[in-house]
Amino acid sequence: MKKKDKTNAAEPAIEQDAPVTEPEAQVEQPEQAAEAEPAAEEHEATAQEWQAALELAVKQRDELKDSFLRVQADFQNFKRRNQTARADGYEDGVREVIAATLPAIDNLERAIAAAEKVEGAEGLVEGVKMTLNTLMDGLKRFGFEEVPALGEDFDPEKHNAVMREVGDEPGKVLDVFQKGYRVKDRIIRYAMVKVSVEA
Image 1 (cartoon, rainbow, N blue to C red):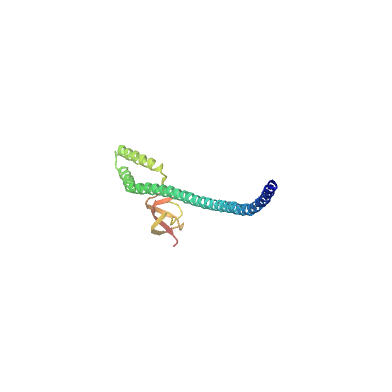
Image 2 (cartoon, one colour; image 1 turned 120 degrees about the vertical axis):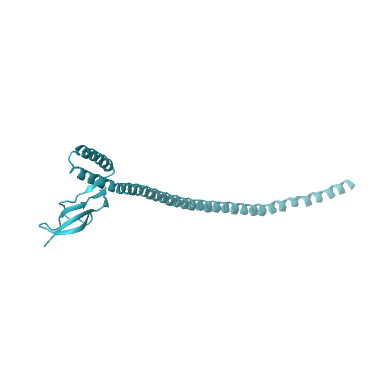
């Protein structure tokens, strides 16, 4: 009888331990689902940040490109202006130097005209003419030339009328008191002339 009681007392203890394992498995499933949701949200936020960073990089690239193009255009304009200013400065300097030599040219021509009236001064005349021709040839390399005047139609852009005289051809230049000169397309001294007018 005592052996049967021990066996019966052990059996209920096994039945009570069996149900404990089932609730533990059921509790773990909601926790795993809850952990999966934050992981998905974290992944979505990272994609949005990359998209925003890409859009910002594209915007900055476009701004830098526009800035570069503006700077390049400004530099090209500055370069052209500088080249133009340098060229204009050089041409202005050439004209000023040549204009300063005009009195010397006038005096050489007067010396030739006076020496030609003196007998036996042929050698002097030739020497002065050679000097004048050498000077004129050197200046011509810079675009220096005499302004046509005698017998030409009066042109206020080239001639300075200081005297008028009735003549058969009104508007014609009858005499030149002082020669005019230009360097390329710029007048450096107007020709001082006498002009024919109607009666």
